[in-house]
Length: 407
Ligand code: ADP
Ligand code: MG
Image (tube, protein in one colour):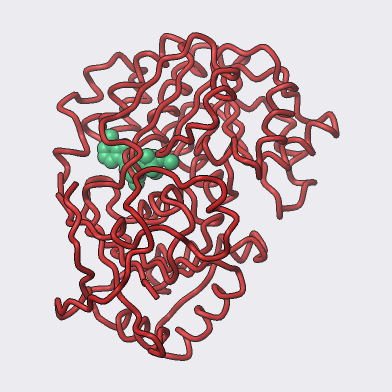
């Protein structure tokens, strides 16, 4: 453990000190009782850690995509995306998945899990496009769209088809998409079940089921829908579970989904990404917390910031106040329409807004290149939530920064 004991200010380097840790340092997740409480009981010391940048070397292996036998057109699409060597998780999962094995894979945020499951899926689809369907289920709409985008870029010119079925969109347009044979369907559980209820989506034809961010998919918020989906799918060739964190309490449920699986746990998975510099900022009693935030964000090295807020209402308020303070900001959370959310992420990607204010739910799995800073305006409730939040920066081997406010 390379945790600094003192809290440091991200700028000026002046230690602010004075925070009282609320309990013994604990790794991993907190227990359920803590989850119910309003205020986080996590020890702020957990959020201070020096980056140990591994750079591209730590992110990628020596193995190049040419070394594995892939369809030449798929290979050229992979290279066209700028992927040359496999990441560790890709190296450990692609071959067994090509062999048709079930898998549970745990690997850090930003380590290339999407391509790790999509590349074998594309190979299977190319072998038998008429009879192959993969279903990728995700906890958020944005993540579903992002996965379909990755699929599209990997399959350019290959005559494979995909669709994304998510809430907040007009279901009539889903009907049209279902008229053609789809090799890959990506979606969120509610809409997928809805389409299945309407007898439009034939879940029993699914060959490969992927649960991305599976610990979230199997937690209370989603597990009943996921169980329904799994029952409707019935017999399938392959089941794949991918995430950056593992919830030990889900062990039995995981076992019930997988048949003779391979477990891939990339070293140090479940911990935070080594490429992220983690700091806390102490907010003295009576201090103007928002003022501190605004002053910090005005610093020019804060190029692209995701700011996490615990509630939707706070996210709205922070975005509004930042704009009033002259910082371009937008927000994504569950109460915003899908169009609005997609547009905000686009604006953020393009750099038209510098700060994206988000809730945990909306930001799971999102990959925006070059997010320089993740700021937690409040302590996250669980260590896993923290890992996923700060994992929006320091992606693909780059260095990122995480700053957590401690009241
Ligand atoms: P995860 O799901 O593990 O959080 P993603 O699949 O979203 O990570 O990938 C993180 C980033 O790394 C993406 O921008 C992706 O394009 C990039 N990436 C994935 N695989 C490679 C690779 N082999 N070489 C270079 N970049 C890659
Ligand atoms: Mg992912």
